[in-house]
Image (tube, rainbow, N blue to C red):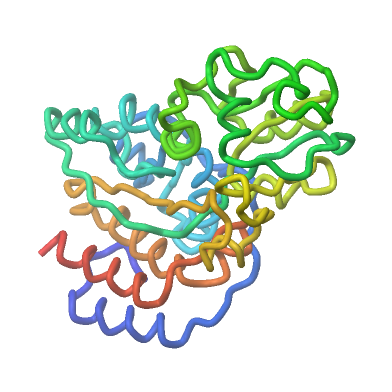
Length: 326
């Protein structure tokens, strides 16, 4: 792949050949990008820039692929910034200051309107699936929670102590750690788990940095928190994942890639990237997105800690990408 324009038929042939031939790729580093960062889509100095913002859940995928892409394209800089899904849309992507926004839930109507008001046309691509993970301190006796119990713990004016949820559990204050309201994971959990039970509690330790959530749960007795599965898998010796069930008599299922893929895990959800159609007219953006979508059906995604899309979904994504610039 080069940074110059390629004939679209050549791209299409290469793409089909890539998907047919790719079975697995090696695990890539989860470390952050080491190239120059900054705000604003477009080029910077003598280096072309592809700016990626958005979901902290999607961030490990974007960051891993950005590093790999930059290794092969030394004249392209791909800074990645985990701003949160909503924060990325409102502050970066829709104002035209980033080219790509990771999202752990679909774009909302008001965000779409904001993009349209700024002349930004977002194109949606599903790039994987996550198992939203509820975790507790390793010394916690809690092993399984129902949706109703989760709603009790996480709704405003809900349970204050663990014994409020279950009389057999400790009579101790619940210490909560979770994503802020700008997070797509926050939105997904509020809408799909708390639902009509009320609004999300406001009194909790909130941060977009999922590693800080892990640390908070690890070092705080009687704690609980939630985030994307990749962060749990990287830290499963430090904290304990809680099984989840829908309904009081449902089966309790622990988060895993297999359970998310099969649908057995109740808190599985799709992951997306949104790409500016205008940005796709620039070859570095097109080439990076093409690379990203090619990798989305490979072991790169599962190595990070998420479920890859099917080869059929990857092919559909790549056709949508090609059509977006024709």
